Image 1 (tube, rainbow, N blue to C red):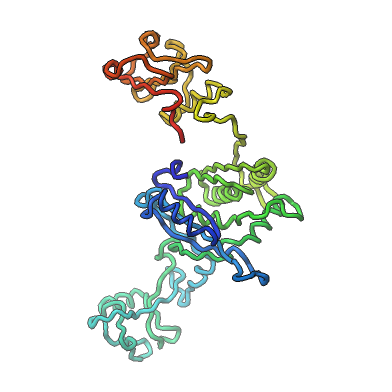
Image 2 (cartoon, rainbow, N blue to C red):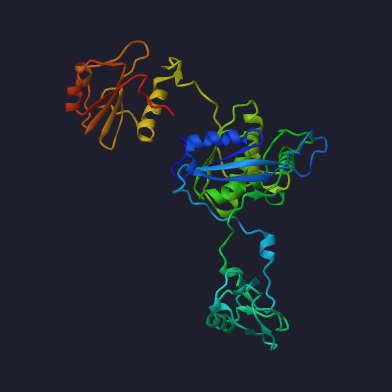
Length: 402
């Protein structure tokens, strides 16, 4: 997963209490301790288990690491309905809803310790050991701008009006995620039962959609690619499709599942989410389903049952990150393609050894700045290869591997 992440990517790993400490050590070794972001606690259960021998296990950990912490930029969490409900408009201010904030601070400064007279005539000083948040001049500016609240009768201790329109569009994520915000295990099971319209539980431990949506919302852009290498019931795809429908994003997902329910549960769930289920409208979208093919390597040798075309596609992509182009009929059949002035050749025959020699070079018609040639062996000297700007790569030892 570390190798596959983009340089501004991030990984979240959900794990219980029994192995969290060991996981942290492993991730420190792979990602580097400096790329540790946070350890989130997710309240995964609604009620305690009264038959627990020691403690009732109520939470999981979600461990977060960045590929490169300097490059990863986290997003703000969405403001909840409860957070927005704290804002009112008690004086019908045309600037909209607001909430009052304490005008006093504990860090004392003599120049911000002064007496304030309320509209009712009451004299107010900061609490003992405190001072006001702003200077007397700034206070007068705020009062004249109707940003100071003295209460409905003008007799309260003054406070600052904080308008919802002035605050950042979201909140800084916290490390405690409660079930009311992101759901719990029971929530995940109920969603899955509705999707499949079954009274029995088709999958034992599905994550709730809101949990994955929260992770995605704070960690990625609207056009990111999300990889879930233990897809389970397909919650990650469900969450991606929900977010795309909500905000018009173009996020893409890759799910990997090795168990025998990959098609009947994982892929089937994605189909139903796209088209709609129960009384829930479909999200729209599309996806492709593939089954694992032959392995590229068998005991460190190239798989003799794998078509040569598939090996060529793999090598060219690993070298260039591009798809294999159409064959160039002007050159020999071993040319893979040319990219950024480099011509790539895969001189391979599964039934006999292939050797890079003068005879092979004479068959090359393509003009390039450099040549990278894969073969079983090379009969040319190092000085000759360097003079012709040729790099020899031995099959299968030097074929790039993920």
